Length: 132
Image (cartoon, rainbow, N blue to C red; front, side, top):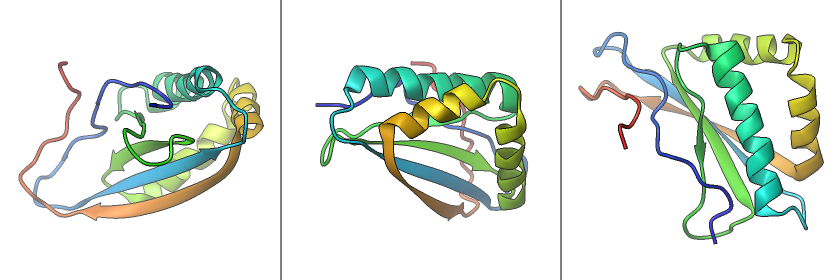
């Protein structure tokens, strides 16, 4: 059973195809008893707020959902030219008016979170929104 549903979208794009980019992934484990409907509503609220109020077209925060393995998890990911820019962006997010209700809603459903950072070496690949 899929916990959440999402159209695949790849966030960010190579501003310089010769430089590496960085992918941030945060995986959340849900508290016992949280329904997939509640989790999807909360996660989409966060994702929409971040994309519309913080990123405003400068990349896309994207949701990942399990198709196999534990179904009590979901992830967000974002691709950026700079780790520093992502860390600064996250600190700005907490201060944005209107984010606190989304943050509180996440804390009500999430038991734990785990961050991972990956370097995406230059591969002559352009990441862009899916047309599907």
